[in-house]
Image (cartoon, rainbow, N blue to C red; front, side, top):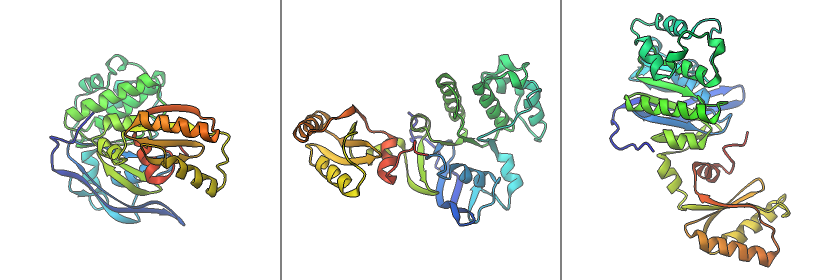
Length: 323
C-alpha cells in the first residue's frame, strides 16, 4: 500500500474553504485540504457527497461561491489559462468521437497544446497500443476509460484529476486501471482521485479525504483512519427479528452489546450491527452467549478486519454504499 514516507513537502494544490450552493442547497460547504507533489490524494464518499463538485471547482470548470483553490501556485479563477496548462482531466463521463480511431483522437487532443508527449509511448503506457488503429466505438468500457486518461495525459500535466475512473468497470478492468494509476505515481504524477469504492481508495491513495454532505469529516492516511477506530477487528451480523424501529429499542440493543466482553464500539446501520474489538475470540464468544440468553437469532454473522467503510460509518452514521 502506498505510504506518504518519501513524498515531497511541496504543496501543489491548496483548497481553502470552497463553497458551492444551488438555491437553498449547499453542495460543498467549506472544504479545505492541501495536496503534496507526487501524492495520490483520494476524495472518498458516497454518491452525492460533493466530490465531483469539489473537483470541478479545482479544475476551473465550476466557479465557487466562496473560498479559493490554487494549482501549482495558480488561482483557478484568476489564472485559469495557466491552470489548464498544468492539469489533466478525466471527467466522470467522457464523450468521445466514436468514428475516430484511437491514435487519431489522441493526436487531435495533442494538437490543442503547445507541447505534448509522443502518442505512441502514451498509448503503450495505457495498454492501448494494439488498439491504436481501432475506432473508438469498438472499445470496451475499460479501454475507453484508459483512452480518456491518455487524453488527460497528452499535455504531460503536473496534476491528474480522475473522477470516479472505475465506476461501471468489471473487476479485471478496474485492476488494470489501478496498475496504471500506481505506475503514474511512480513517474511522479500528482493524482487527485474521487471514488466511492473503499478498497480502491485503500489500495491507491497516500491520503484520503472523507467527504459527506459537502463537508470534510476526516483526512489522513488509510492506515491512520482505520487506526482511529481503536479496534483491529469487527464482528458483523443481523438481527432480523429484533424490533429496531423505535429509537428506544435501538438504544437498548446497542447498550447491551457494548457490555459484551472486549467490545469497544457498536455501530448500527439499517439492520446490520457491527461490534469493534481487539479481542475477536473473546467478543465472539460473549456475543454468542448473550444471544443464547436473550433468544436472538444471529444471521449473516461474519468476522473481519476493520475497514475505511467502518471509519465512514463511525464518522457519519451511514454507509458509503447508501445513496
